[in-house]
Image (cartoon, rainbow, N blue to C red):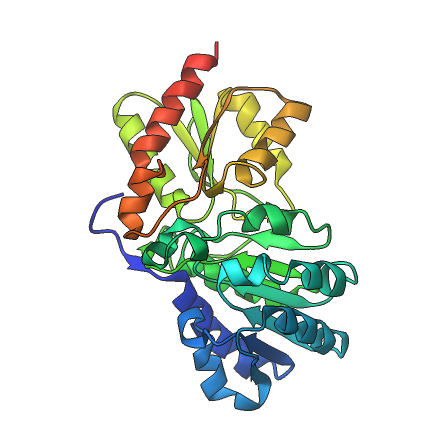
Length: 315
């Protein structure tokens, strides 16, 4: 990856595809929480005001009403910031959406620490763990804008509750136009036989950049984009473990309960190999996104260092 790579915001891609879906399917309704311009749902509100409901800063109500609309047969998209869309209404999500398995798509933005200047209280680093703990939910963390658009379309045509995690700033685009999203399948972006980096979200581009650096050093690094965290593509994880003998996970999330935990569960049961994490171990603070990624060890350089640790343990 280079400094001239194309960047695009996943939340903007979400807003655009939501309008397209609204034109195609009159059964789709959208709920917001007074952050509609920031989440990208404002465009849907302008096009389809009769199918858009702004409930203000009342996230518990958002999820309860989403459940009610879904039980009446609607396809519901509910959007706010990640920190507000998971922690605050978790009981309502668990009881009213997850347990009956209703057709609600919770699409959140401003996840992780790249929310940046909004500070610690607005940086959701535990949300993947929370949502993966709900048995009926599909959990997706797109790598870029094209994957976001494709995943949202898949969510719209797939029955049941979804959680899609998006960011705030523009991030590198790793997919080309025409990309097709395959639910529950890891995507191999680069081949390699020495080590595998399994990444999700913004860390996919960092993993690809790290693989380029490692290739120049004679290390053949496989890169898997694990956009679907639940259901998990355990077959791809175990194949990588067997064929490369060492794994690195890379995520912009707390080390417990996210991608690293998912991968370690799989290899621990089926094919134990060294696994090195690149993940958050504590809360961050206010700052520009790139500076926060550097400070908290979420860069291509940190992925390279983790690969070196994994290789040293391979035996």
